[in-house]
Image (cartoon, rainbow, N blue to C red; front, top):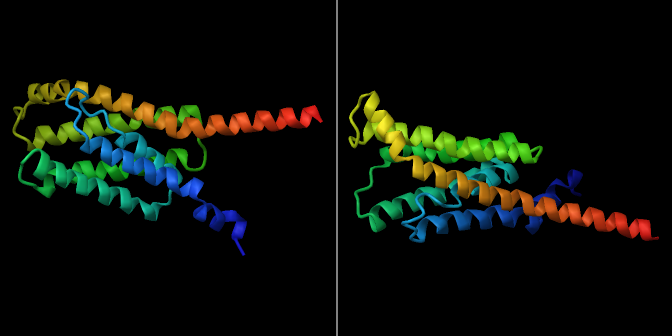
Length: 194
């Protein structure tokens, strides 16, 4: 009835729920005011995890949720007009972060692969988003000095993005690995005791 347990995996709430719950945490971490914690959100880690644990076709849900969050924050929290064109690099990055999780962590998850995702995700966002700010924003002169100033000003955001991604991804991937490790050890101890 179920080919290779695939359908059981899809229906198993232990497989489905963590990715969607982490997505909810990511959205809430953006909505809760945190002015002293620039860019310390669960977004990077949640997108890596979602990409690693869910299918390509399901990636529309996190993208839609984060797009709606961007709209809400821009219009209702920051009281700016919403220009969707300004968000294309960010929305592209959301998809890229999930693709990174899918490519890097879907078939095999290890400490080195998770660490690579933790570095690559926030670093790619830092590079892409700040380049877009420099090109489109008008906040910095369009010369090499303006580009450097844009990246330097964003360093506190980048630091917090790396830290938050490391914490979220570390917990999301690490806790289940520890549970499996302890279960395996207790099973071995039970077999040895017989």
